[in-house]
Image (cartoon, rainbow, N blue to C red; front, top):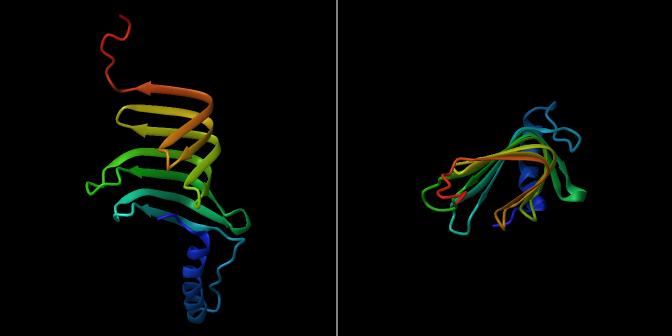
Length: 150
């Protein structure tokens, strides 16, 4: 189920109205960040696909983009086991929810059972399950390479 920023904002409006009715000082503003941001995504079968988390998130509705500080992107198997497959960490990233893409120019750290990769200037495409790292790339493999130099 693709994420729609418009749908999210529509769902957020009743919450904002309820908060402003309860306290005159509480306001939701596009200029202010959402603290401890979380954005889950699910498969059509209802299994967890990914979870975007950040210490702060800024919504840019015109660009249909979310800027995230201290990104933790958890990628799951998308099956009933709910297994965490890969973890992506970056101090700063941009989420394009309509495209299921996350990008960043700052550092990235990718961790899974088979390898760990780091670098800068990166892009993750969730539909293709593809991570592209353009600069300062380092990869350490955990998997065993049998007869690699034969």
